[in-house]
Length: 233
Image 1 (cartoon, rainbow, N blue to C red):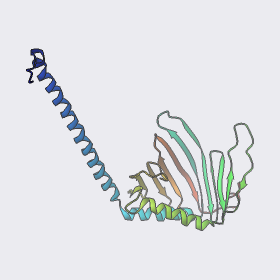
Image 2: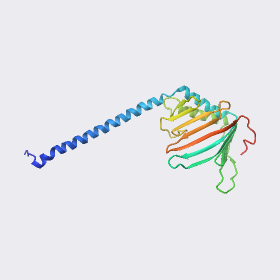
Image 3: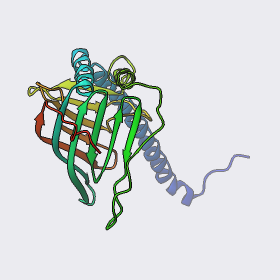
Image 4: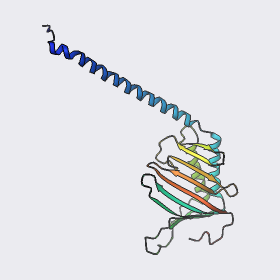
């Protein structure tokens, strides 16, 4: 049996149809926005992946040179949280004469003596520092360690699956921008590295991590002569 809608229902019908049309229109706009965002992301990803291969190769070469160079670099290290402004800072000293290396920072030190890792923990507040200790020899020489690190770095900044886009700036520094999520991304979401022309040492680095944390290292003195005292923990 066909029933004719009552007068109240006929009166509400345009309102119902109007609301339905509004919902469908909103859904269409949302779908269009999602497609647009995906298209933009795809274009942005494609553009970023087209990084300068010469800059990427030059950065890998500079990184290897700084690991193999002989120098002492003295400066400061600072770690800052952007949301709270909380900051920790210390002197930063890196002494390197391969296959020996010693890096002092935040009251502690880490280093290598060829295939042996050295750790000097930072002392608890108000206490004497615990003794430094050499780990059991790993069997991986200093040069082998550098070669493995450089190979891993090349995989993150070159090729179609690169994690970072690398560009070389006018002042000879390198900027890195993360373009792909990777669990072992070495340099946060963005980073800048500047190298000393004479020794290869990093003289300025800025690494920005997810959540607004920034690590900054600024070197104020570089010398090519390394003494035994520089490498003593």
